[in-house]
Length: 157
Image 1: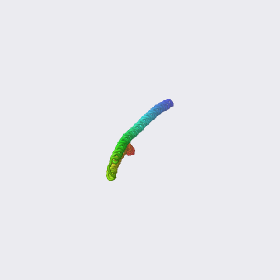
Image 2: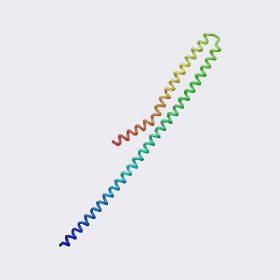
Image 3: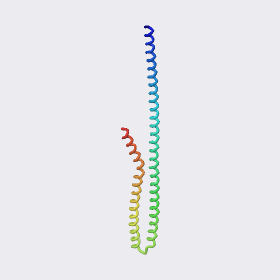
Image 4: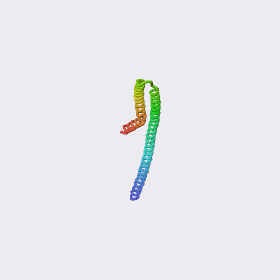
């Protein structure tokens, strides 16, 4: 009977050991699996951050490219206006110099002042339109990125 109890105790101990080993192996496997999944999520998050940063940089570059082009257009327009203005002034001066009377000089000066003011108002309207378009277009890529970021934040809630 003592042998039977010893054998039973031995078998019970062996089963308990086997169960403990299986549980330990399952626990270790679960831990390794959780670790792998954590690493994969971390790697994916790093990739997401990298892509997010690249998209932000691309938007900034696009915005700066639009701004540079817009400033070039403004400079070209201003240079053309300045050239036309100088040419108009020279032409008016020549006309006044060749005038035959003081009355003719006053008429030429008056017409020059009126046309000069009309050109100025027209040029300022054109410049305002260029600047408005420039600001709108230059901010578009940045606004698009901000909207996408807000969508991502809302999706995480």
